[in-house]
Image (tube, rainbow, N blue to C red; front, side):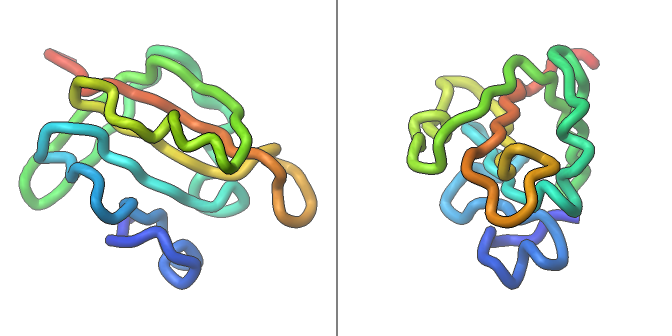
Length: 115
């Protein structure tokens, strides 16, 4: 489940669509944030070329993972539009860190064609 907004109260109950970014049915970079120790825990096993499917009332949107990276929290360049329809998933890193994690894990996927 994805809710609108990535504030603390929303992320306690779901992953959050980052306000002001594209929605799946729009062109651009859809950004979704979630906690590493709840809804986004499975991201620790994500691989290049994995498929991600988002289903909304407007349709089903498929993406293919093109990269993963670990960045500092202030490294926001990874959130910039990629020039094509994409999905960026954001969570804290390391996954099994006790307490507030010092880094961010980023999954970048591109809108898939014909999957």
